[in-house]
Length: 501
Image 1: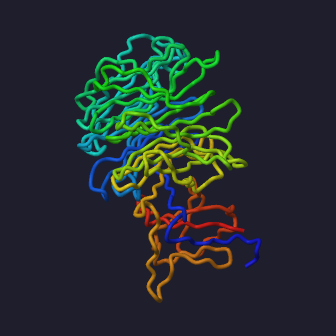
Image 2: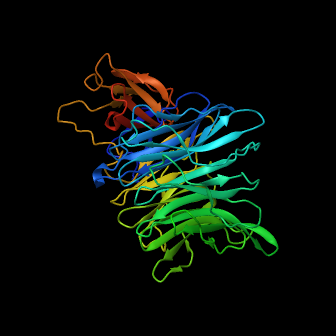
Image 3: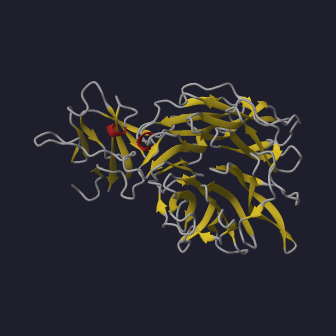
């Protein structure tokens, strides 16, 4: 074979050596269509049977409708529903979804949607839907916010909605709200599984009138303290700078105590996240210690005994990294470890990629960064992370180019979506062979009239395959997948191939 000719190298066993095999989970294949704002929740259950729930937003481009969709896996991410479940068609907009589960296995989704579309007046509401059967059916939307004012803001009056659940199944929701003319963090609580919601309560205590952003919520087990992390501003050296704050409610969301500043920076901090067990509250955030410094991600932990905050600790080693867009979303697993997924731009790289790290000492020290992305040639968007009772992490994120962003999933669970070894008996044909620039698919593997498809890294079909010889000389170098037509939802029916020159 000529060294300039393309060849196919068949890879079995696992997709990636780093333990993060990637799989696309959405089914939004329209042209000029982006999927993003994804969130993941891990449901209760036996360690090997904890369901995974994902919600995401899809947009038609340019300037079209936005919708909210749902996906589910009951086998650790190996397979997903064959079709996305529609939660809300936007009219024109349904966006910023988040998802949580309670101890009984109920699934709740919150999102913002536009009630009266128009070019001037824009009216938005936050609503909640609930499923008690794993996402098969959903309740009618219940309204979370109690804003009765009109809003002319082109960005809407309520965004970045987040939801969490306490040990009794009560729900805490927080979001960015512009009803007063400035952005503040508001919250509401439901004590009946999301059917009704209490009067909205202001969370932040900002007095600078520069706005608050990026809320994150968590309910501390044992104490049932309601925790909200968010951006807020403070005066420093004659300037107003953004800082990372944590707000706590000890009366289940009726009132919030004054905020605690998490960062010790002199310039800027943003996008804090929070998780907690009975004895620790762990937060992270990103920012710059001084103007012109490199961006970094830090974590900080509150110890309930002796009720003090520890010093900040670095999450990332930035010796070879240039920029960070968001600090890591956090998850807490049943073994006490803290997990984070980060969106990072490497020096000289084409864009942002997803990385993972974890801490086994409540955020004091962190493992080295692990690359989650398989395809680093395209951009990745803001990730979300969940963890199960045994310490495995599950990451979802948007990945692609503008107009082609799709939702991808990866896990470090050994029994997750890694491809299975091909069991070949002596004397039988292998799954596929390569001979003079053609891919040979045995008829015993893909019988007529069934067929297979060759997909690129984004999941787009690039050619049909048939039993026998398939000419692949026209393919560009890269990662491809052979997928059997009769088993759309079975990971074991997909084989990875790499085209090289």
